[in-house]
Image (cartoon, rainbow, N blue to C red; front, side):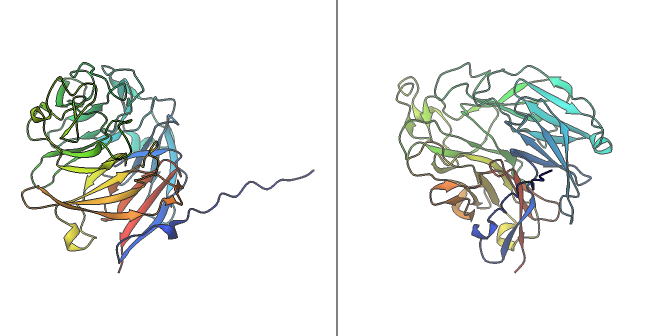
Length: 355
């Protein structure tokens, strides 16, 4: 009998990733196909959502020498988002939010997901949902526009909503948001910040993706009438002027696909990173003539929460115009390192500071 050896997967070229002096990147796991949103439980388990695979993963002892990956949910619809509260894992599934109760004690025998809410649209175009619990105890859930550019019901689409953990009291938090796949709260002020992807087919260099700051509930950020604060839409721009809407806190570049974002809340990075730093994962362009993105950027704020600058923090996933990895989400680990998910390579990376 002829025995064929199993194919050997090529090692990911992490030596190509460029970081500031003193920082190092390592592979936490390459056994998480289509890795997207991430969240830690208080017990230290890392949960990871996916989009195309329909699965949710749990990684035990993720910062230890032998992280163990388990599949804890399958056959969900684009379960990109995961959030943990009171012993239960919440996961998004396009039209609904589901919950896995007592999950950490049942990683080898996970419970069936319980539907918390099924009140969301079923369209899969921008239908994936990054989710997270806010300081107010509500679960925040974005609902993307079901198109590249259109004018849907703004109380139903192109917004960010929130609800109680039991699914009740669903309400709109922000309007005019085309496709947000990442948000967080400023630990100093409690303000809500989020990324938003700009529309396509307006050329290589416009409009910018946005980093936005919510000043009041129900604030409108322009879609579909105005993009990046000052670019009227060719089709809808005559209906409402840009002056009616909240401008972005920062413009991030056209087609970079700014997705996951987190304020840095750890103590392991140098002092200049420990206050007023936002990390953003840029998934990278899909239709730009020259690809951009495929990196992690740092946005700096002053004491008043105003953006003072941006800089590239990690890059190198793009090689000669073709990607070997695509960053999706960032997550501050309990030890202060920064985790980065990559749905293209099916990997989770860990960035540490060790001068």
